[in-house]
Image (cartoon, rainbow, N blue to C red; front, side, top):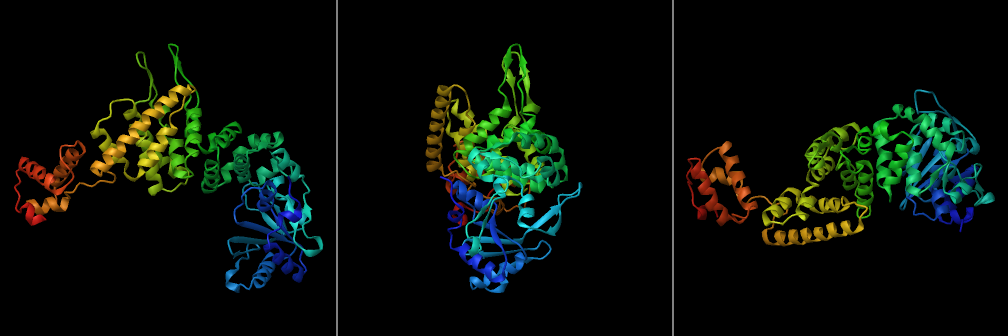
Length: 481
């Protein structure tokens, strides 16, 4: 059931905004995403956009007084004619109605004061151009000049004005079109979609930070593959993410083909999205096979191979993150680790599982074990449902074995009990290659199950490794303890 204008503004906060606007003699309206989501019955972000005919800053300050808020809680941006304040959990933004004109080489508009109609004309989509009046005289009046309500009912995304102009003026709106379609599960109106195909090159004037911000919102959708398919169909994906497009296609040799890694990756992305909202786990799904085009080889006996794609893919992650202006911190390192390790649990599920292999996986995955196992489960895709079930059942065995080894050996985030400082103390030597050699030998012995990760067991092994290097202990185990 479609809500009326009055039902949209049932929140008591709107009564106070309307009262403040009446005192100043300003016509005020709630507009944009709040109205759209209220009509759809969709959980909205705690953002409310208010447009008024006149000074948005003056209205924000009057609303603050209405709520008995101190003046310093109103954030004023005079250059943009906007003001913001927070009321409880709500972020309110106020702006005076305006009209905009653009120059070809910039998405920053020339702004002038305007009417409500001017303000609605400049909106990106019809479903975001609906406004509900807050003044007592016309309380709850819905103003919908572009039939946004009908487009909501038809689940269609359409621009208020000629789409070529809308997208050319502000090319970021093309990314927003895909994002809204993916978030809402809407179709894009044919003429609007054609304009995306024609104007996509205009994205060159948009900063990569802004593009990636929209791309991340697409990735966080319930079914992100829909957004990627739209990006590809309108020609935007090759512009912003050419590495991903290279996954497309199937080569055939001697009657043998491989899976289309583009569509496989989208399936993996959808699969992992059913189990996590973590953006970086989802990025790992996107990039897990990114190096397959570069590593693809045909072997007459084995068919198509992609040897080393996990290692090469991990090495590509930093460059891709840098170009897309994504963080080059621990988030990138997490994605890199998951790409590098994504074949390891799958290999374990196909062979006899040894404790040593499980220890190594626990050691290398560390805190990211859950993310890795979630990615690997998502990576099991096949049109053969029985095959998928069989693989997932094998994965259950790997999971059980990992828990057993973890409980027994405490190897998650494990650090050998013998540190470099202890080695130097025991043999009374300074830093040098011997320290590294002994540390690696102890670590390998623990992972192989030859030595327990406790001081007594590791002590004896350390002393023996030291002897091989001509070193003898200068203190005893009891001195160390």
